[in-house]
Length: 330
Image (cartoon, rainbow, N blue to C red; front, top):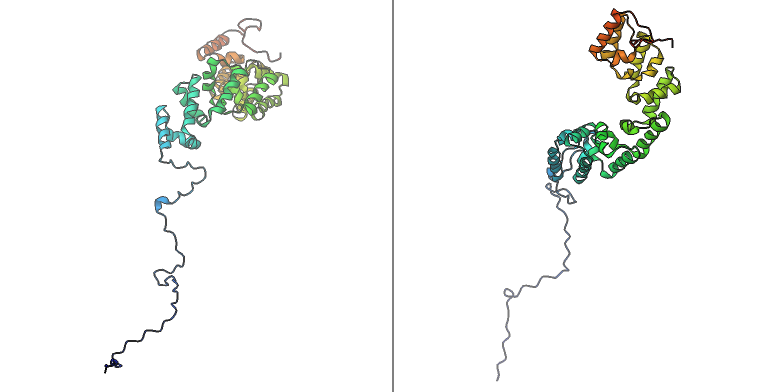
């Protein structure tokens, strides 16, 4: 008889643990920590370093700080090579800082090509700093105008620019050509090439007001134009600081006739304090009346000699070749 297999009996103490009841796993959501160390819910970018912060804005009318870059260094070296202190020049003309150095070199090369020397260039830059920041495209039309319309000889260009550098930054259409036509047609000056310094003057704000001033003094239009044609430098004198005080002294203190000014407008070119007043007072002391040219144009020694001759001798008649008096009734 076969033995039946014995059934194993397990005690309750030896029974296997029941598997835990499986529950569906919940998806955990990550939330930012609300600790006191990190209370921001949004991640902020890191603070920029001080070297990355933009520079503070410059106050109005101030010179921008010099950028320590290669362009600035090149300008510093190049200006030093032509004898110009770049930092001083920058203080008088800040736009040069943004002018490309190739443009500056082209402009200076063009100025050298017309005969300007390094001293000429330094003088022109000190009188009119805008020249060095002007592109050659704006300078060439000015040279063309001076040569073709104002009839300046090529060999005289250097002298023209040396005397009046501001011509180079004047507009041909708006200033140079209108002034040329005014001097030729209204005043009757034919050889404007000898008076190119006047081309930079404004017709409306400088030339016409001076003509009107003399007309208000009692000169006719014909006489006024004749005075300016005889002595065009009258256009350059200030009305308040030159023409007016000298005219008042001529009429009130000297008691002269307007006809003398018509014939000798160069009177306004002499210093009132250093030439006109001292010589007039000496004539009054000697009771001698000399014409304006003799009184003012002569050297100091020659003036004294003529004054003594007239004082120690009888007054010559007007027909005498030694007569220097003026007949105010004619």
